[in-house]
Image 1: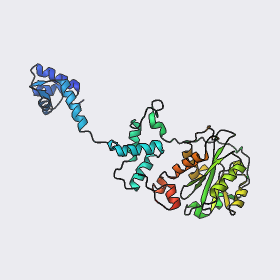
Image 2 (image 1 turned 60 degrees about the vertical axis):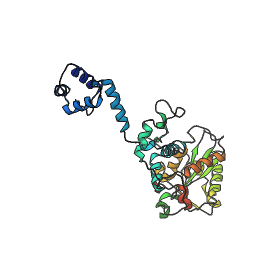
Image 3 (image 1 turned 120 degrees about the vertical axis):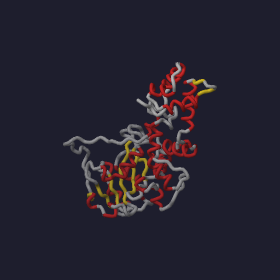
Image 4 (image 1 turned 45 degrees about the vertical axis):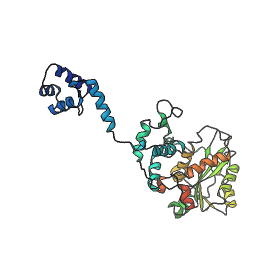
Amino acid sequence: MCHHHLTLEERELTMKYQAMGYSISRIAILLHRNKSTISRELKRNSVNGIYLPSAAQKAYLKRRKACRRRHKLDDPVLYRYVKDRFLRDQWSPQQIEGRLILEKAASLISYSTIYRAIYSGRFDDHHLSHGSRGVIRKLRRRGKSRHTKGYEENRGKIQISYEISERPQEAEDRSRLGDWEADTVAGKTGGSCLVTLVDRKSRFLVGGKASLKKAAPVNEVMIGALADQPLESITPDRGKEFARHKEVSEALDQVKFYFPLPHHPWQRGSNENTNGLLREYFPKGETLDDKSDELIQEIFDKINKRPRKCLGYRTPYEVHYSTELRLI
């Protein structure tokens, strides 16, 4: 097989055939190369008429390295920005690219280039590596368990005020602020949980920690979190912690609750996605009892200031408050 560049073995054979007195044409035939290739090789890499294959190979590799196309991440400023957003702020490669474009940054990079850098180990640090996969493990993972055919709801049935099919069109098409999706993120069984409320239009997250995954403490967090927010409707999960939702309605000017169909989490897709982001900070099975309200709100704020593809790479905070941030 003919390679574009001479190999070390071909260079060694060239030296051997030259020492045997073979002409350039004959050497080319024996190596299945063009004679101009052999002529150029001997002329370029001979010193005082002496051709050494090891020196020729070393010179070739040096030239090869020098002509290598400069990588986007060779720019130290861009490298640090991408690494910080990916590892410190948990932005996805698409979010990083989209935000750079949105803010008209001086240096741009595609998300595919960022992915290649991640998989090549460019961002690996010894204290972040896990096994042999390094920071690849920092990429988000999707895939939730599905119920088998014939599965029946075992949680207690709760009284439904309104079905999701009755929800106003403005909530369906995300044309206004104030239509919230609600759920909880459980900690260790029997302990505290997070109450999460996500605005359908802006994807803005509010909520906090409830002492137990029960109706009374969950209601208390919901009422406090939504008291100063635009409020048109609430679409919660069908969990028993929302069984006393009428108390929230009474406390918040008779806001209506619209319940999705059982096992239809995509009908609360914004909330489900946000809960997935929170799991990066609060893994399943770990207690939330020792997590301070300040820490939880700090994480909420970080998520609210993370650019989203669905928002044109604006952040939920920017959309919710009709403002602009500088994140570069």
